[in-house]
Length: 247
Image 1 (cartoon, rainbow, N blue to C red):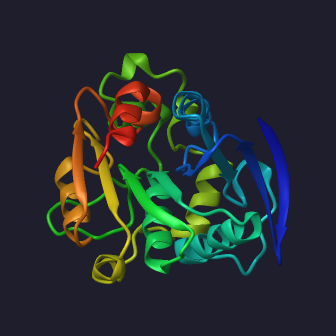
Image 2 (image 1 turned 90 degrees about the vertical axis):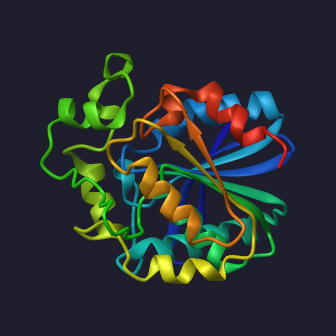
């Protein structure tokens, strides 16, 4: 595994690269890149895959240019990264806010992307199933919402909570952490999109996930038992099984 800083115009991306064969781009949520690191290793080893795990600019103390705003802007940055690395056949996998960005990448129609996987993603507005407002909640409260079994949580920092990365998250999402135009735009997605949801997600419910999936033509949806908002931490083997299952 190598860690590289890659300049893309005004953006400098810090990217962990586990270089194997079939390429994956993993996108973390508000809890930061650490919430995806272990799963990146698992995916690289089991699938013999090349796994890119960038840190969203502004997270973890990384630089972020003032003109990089919104999930769409971040999606364009990652599309440019795939161009820079000359990758094809890429599967984009995103959790939480990373799921939102994965959906935006799917909308860009890049010929380098073969599929997207949204894992307990946020970003759409679903009538009757609002996202939980996590601002101001304690780490213990966030654990209760984010884990099927909070006792298994490795540490409170494993979920979005007060701290610099939440401020970085809000810099992309705004206070509402949704885009009212997203659901209507998803009808334009032309690559296969698979949605994976923890049955016990207290941030965005399984019904929210089903509505998210219903907005994408031809998408598929899988529910993970005994899992919450962070399956890559709580049930990584089960998530990997779903991710690698033939479709």
